[in-house]
Length: 395
Image (cartoon, rainbow, N blue to C red; front, side):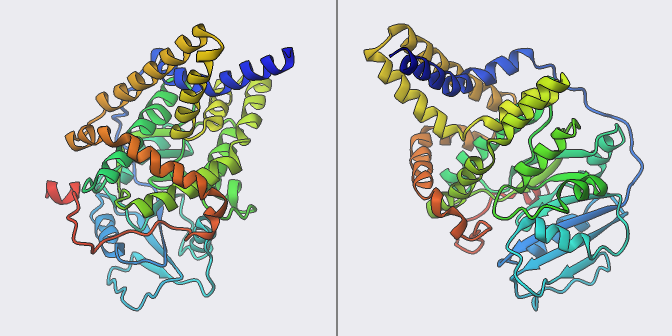
């Protein structure tokens, strides 16, 4: 009986600490000062990956060519795409069409790397549905010049045209705040977001060139390897990439099923980093390890509620602890949105969080078949719904 009770207590702790963690991190967080120095230009390879869809490529290339920067080349890796409709006159744009389907982010990246026209010092990864701000590379340079070898920019919502898009954006704001600003502010590393990130070419090749990472989650592997070297991943909210948010429920379910599958596949990397953090006396590795162990938000929220109700028959004190944790988590979520430039449509969408969670539960049920879905999210560009494109609004 004692063993069962001990397992029950341990299980509750492993779930419950995720409710308290954001507030604890926020209380010890010290905001980083903005780097104001002007950095000299480096030589960038901008890798734009596309799988099956090329609809948004002209827009992303237009935004890249609008960069206030001169020393870069753009490599479009059009995997399993018909490139007959792509025509760019700018000699800085190189279109690469792999002869065989790669169906992998890292394979696409290294296909570009192996076809570099020159030895680029740095590379940055952009998705085919992204848009970049004109100062994107300049802002990244500031952190590289501070000695960082990996930098994560901020991914802001390109569209807020549906409830799903707004809730997706709210989730991103939460993660950018705690997994970007706060983690860096307490001496750890920012998590990688899959795009809007940059590395020295040497570091990227050292980490992944001899690893064939297939399916979603290459960023999870990459960030664990970088922090495993005890290097810090910088975060800057001034290197802005606009990212297409999910607009349809089926799109959301397929995307989240891949992401959930990725967590189950790679969460154990957190244990390795925690052990390294202890043996190396590294705050960076130790804290980051716990972040990698954290399950998707909706999973630990549902489990937390179930544990709270289970304790109604076991311990009122435990019920109080669970309720306090849930309240603090909601407070932490509010802080993240309040401390960020959050659009009023995002605030208004929060009432639909239960519906959003429902579709993520559906994603969980499909997680075993996640890798059978397309390796990229299908985007709907011509469905008659107007996009809220911030770049267009500013022009």
